Length: 331
Image 1: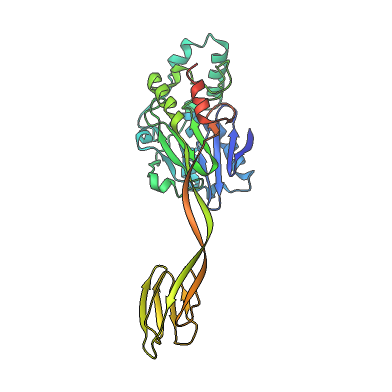
Image 2: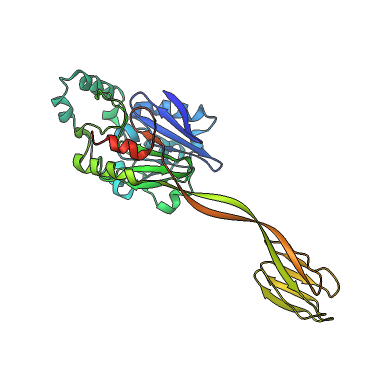
């Protein structure tokens, strides 16, 4: 097992034959996928190795319902009460009500190949045949996902399984692609971005089409900028009577009165005395004189950034533009 921080707060765990992620920020941490059933102790170790407690996981998100990704899900649900969440289209698969897995017969037909035979032995050793479904799994709500660590966004990519997804982590410029495509696999002689062997997909043609659609995906992030602004509040007053002036950001009252400038900013003053503008911006006006409020405003904008950290379910992490990785899938 190897744990590495591939992007800020995004820890990529390479297990014996499949990968999972730990995503951490100020709100806590969550897991994406959970390895094979036999990887459970390694999943727990990877969490504790970061100084975290497995019981504190806010959720385990499942990219798809294959046993090499759901192996720890039932344990976390039963032992810690961890919410196990997946796409609505994948829920029956994760709960064990449907099966979209490569069959033993499909593997036996290819077992004469040394790589396939070795992989088959590992799968048996990893307790794939003893996998426990996550019967308490629930379908996620897109809005609720954004409140989890990393603010994940689910992208439905059917083909590998009917409800297969990639999970975009926009602030990190990273994406967990699960098995939508991989960067290596025990039965593949290649390294780098590639599709899994067709026997692993419930619909191989659709899986490729979905994977290619990721080429257009970019991350939209919020950028907060600081800007200095000057706001002018015009206040005149009449003696002994309050007057209210409405302004955003300018307010004008009657001469020789105490005046209150209501809007953004808000000012209340007595004739011949300074008036204080209170709100997001602060101003101290003199009666009969314009008052200038110096304010620092925070402007929140949305910016589009490239996704350059790709975290697959099998093989090492990739650091390249997502569009470039997707183009390689055509070869």
